[in-house]
Image (cartoon, rainbow, N blue to C red; front, side, top):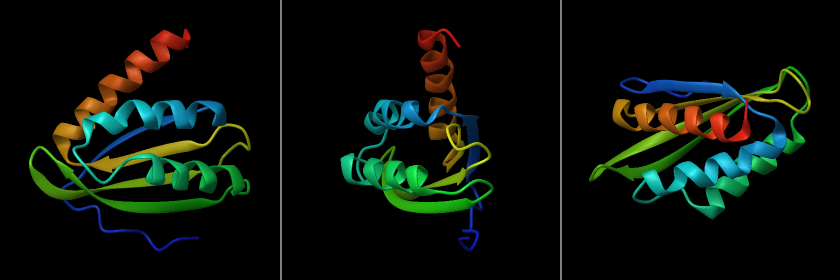
Length: 112
């Protein structure tokens, strides 16, 4: 289990994903971030989620540039079901609002 990261000043956006939808969603939010969250980081998150065991929690922290400022995004994964991890995004409030909006659109498009 990872040591919890300092998330002071960050806002949570979270949902439960089918494992197959993790990568498409991460690819969808990547353009919202100016730099620091691209294919390499998406691959790290996906590989971690795929190898986690039930009831495990892991966190990854990525330095990013958002809205012209250096900050970070923390992604916490709780594997409550082998095919459906709970994923928590901790990011600056403006980015969290955009992630929430993208979640809503994403699940509407999937018919969920």
